[in-house]
Image (cartoon, rainbow, N blue to C red; front, side, top):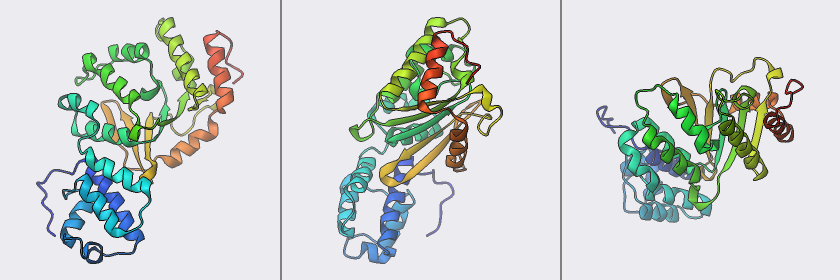
Length: 285
């Protein structure tokens, strides 16, 4: 099949659907012809779908998986759900005019991720920010594409979102520099943010701090997130550049594991955060 280089890249949900369908087919050890035999579609169509360039709706996804036979319910549900949301969640649509294609795809994957691992060097990661903290950071950004009037509503929608209706798990690691210093005299905003991190920890999310005593470690060059879609056994790494977010070409899981080695435990991190808001000395961490 010839590739059309002028054709736009497929949407991220189409790529995820294709990846999931391909893995199911390969696990069943079916070639394209065998996979569509008796289904009413040809091999070229399936190849296009698996690369994200073919059209397939939720009903046809469900029918194809039923045609394959016994497929775990979690995979069936995840893939049909993706097909039902080709442009991402409904709350994202009012913001599409202000988003680049890259950012739209990133937020679409974030919306599907049931586990988000986020590392923050100089600031608390997006999904763990309070409104006051987020708005304060927006006021000090100088990027030309910033839109303060919709930045917080968009972030608030991202935070409220529940992938598939279920609560997502946050696994957060922040450098001590991001949490132990008052923000330009905004004591109340800073305190509210630290208290929110403690509340997330008590609610069952992982919140860890890398202490200053760790010295130099892998990760200090920039914040990043790892979005994990458990049902599809897939993940996407997102890096923070000076001009915005970008998809990582490298697997960030090894870097995450190295940062984990120098981070405090959740319990010790909670003690550090509590000591910070009480004004206690943090040099012993």
